[in-house]
Amino acid sequence: MIYTLHGELVECGENLLVVRIGGIGFKVTTNNRTLTKLPSLGSEIDLYTFLYVREERIELFGFLEEEALRLFELLNAVAGVGPRTSLSVLDVDSVPNIMAAIIEKRSDLLTHASGIGRKTAERIILDLESKIKNSRSKTAVQAININQEAEDVLTGLGYSRHEVRQALEQVGEAKTVEDKLKLALKELGRPRHA
Image (cartoon, rainbow, N blue to C red; front, side, top):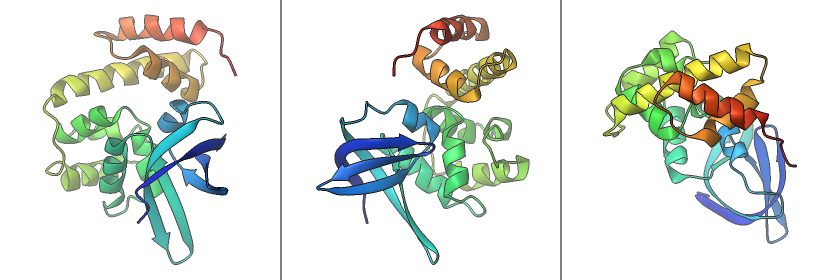
């Protein structure tokens, strides 16, 4: 029903943002990866959205990329996987890498999402592997492995999972865990501007 929103970003919080359009503020629930890519408050923003309607509530979910919305919709359609769990899967890695993990039947990678156990990960793979296309799935799974190992090492060093994921997103792809760690540590050492 509401597929896109275009307006002014007026507020950001934990897993939500507010977009003002013609004097009306739309509260949009999203994942952490989307929040880390948002422009500054007061900027114009375009979101792809999914209107979730249940007897007890109506909620709007939104993403910066149409690809993230499509994967969210696919995940949300899996039995036992609701919108909150779908958001946590989208926080595991980039959309192409998550799709690659599904194609390659890597349930161990999906279980890094909050609320996803082995059985749910296997159900996601069973339901979605034929619906997802990704020609570079083996390369993408290697990238997920590198990201997960680097994330585990950096959180073990005391960095929060949120700041580690932000840093890993900023540095992009790397061929080895060591390279990824070097780049991420350099990014984590940079001063943050508000």
